[in-house]
Image (cartoon, rainbow, N blue to C red; front, top):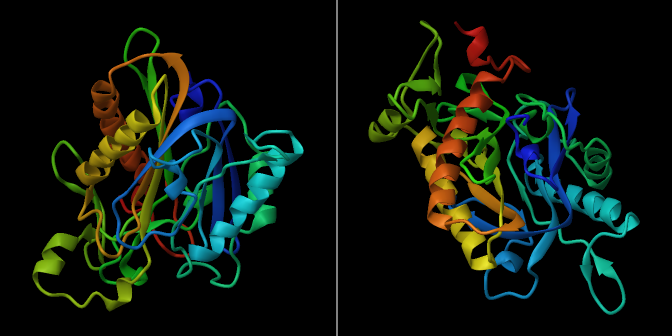
Length: 319
């Protein structure tokens, strides 16, 4: 066990990181197929192939999930993932070809680093080449390279964030895991105490201001648009139907609300994917409850694992 989403058999994770342009992408490969669902709560999403994951639609399984920086430009990186999978014979079977199914979601990181360099097909392909079923790098890597939080006062007061992952075994060999990148408009809070762990920085005393309180005071938000979004993937080795895996994604979003305040705003594109790889049955209510807990934990990890980049300080450098 690596305490990572790769603890689910059949999942590999690969990062592509550009530390000069400060952007990147992360691929979650499930090459032989995983039943997939999605829940989109934020009102500024950038996505690809999410409608296909609805229970009433045809395709049951996906071969990868792609999370990318670069705003809508970053959706191009999914084409590189498709090329990688096609070359290796993975995809949805049709009468003439195997078509890899690669749902994707993006976050806005154009205000840090270079706004002219974004992940594309080549970068998505490189992320696949780097994929492994072992330990997963966290922090400012892959899609987390340019992630920031607490942007109610603009990027100059933001705090550096990144990517986190964790897993938990809940008995009878069932594992639930998550990988989340945190690029939120709001603050990351301790789910147990409500204490702000990262948010808009108070430049004089190195403490954080409350985004919720700033909003109540009517603070002008125009500098915050549309620079945000928290993206995640939860996965389990339990066997779930398409309806159940969509429910798992829905319940996992509760973890976002526990650890980010405010969450699911008009300025976020919060999107949570869910994957089922396995046959052993389990209660989706239990799985969803655990998934929400893990997502909240992973959001905190994404903050604590981050490092200062491009002058945006990380929490561990502020103490």
